[in-house]
Amino acid sequence: MSSFPFQQNLKDLRKFQEDTRESYEGISLTYDPLSSPPLQFTTNKVKTPESLKKQEEYANRLRIMVLIILCAIWEEFVKDLKDNDSTKYTSKFIKGKYYEIQFNDDIKEVFLIRNCFVHNGGKADDKYRLYSLQKIYPLDTLIVLNDSDINNYFNLLESNYKLIV
Image (tube, rainbow, N blue to C red; front, side, top):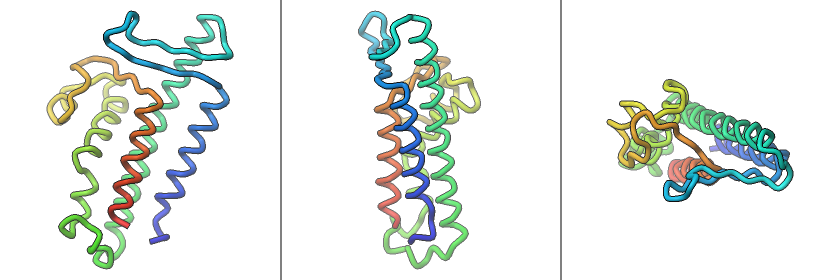
């Protein structure tokens, strides 16, 4: 099924993310609601608080951008499936229907979080609270992504892709 550019797109995006992260060497964001302060970031190159804040803001924007692009890559792949003769791939579909994989509960969660960034300034909205099974973020709370979230999203989409092809 090499006609689908999904794997190459994912590979290129992952490399872009890693290269960009390496250029800001050592930036790390952690969130622990039980810690004080709950949001902490560290770096091994920049020492001034202003520089740390600026780099962390950039790193967070990068994570949001990667999330949005990941969702776009998945949508493109699913559209490609719809546009091609999907009957030859039926044996690998769940119950023979691609859409059951397209937006399973885990993928829905990723898209709901993405939609909060695209449509609500990065805050959990009513749709997220209504449709999310995990409900990690309270209403109107700013969603903060970390590198492990992004890596989990990559892995989730890759594993679902492998279920189909």
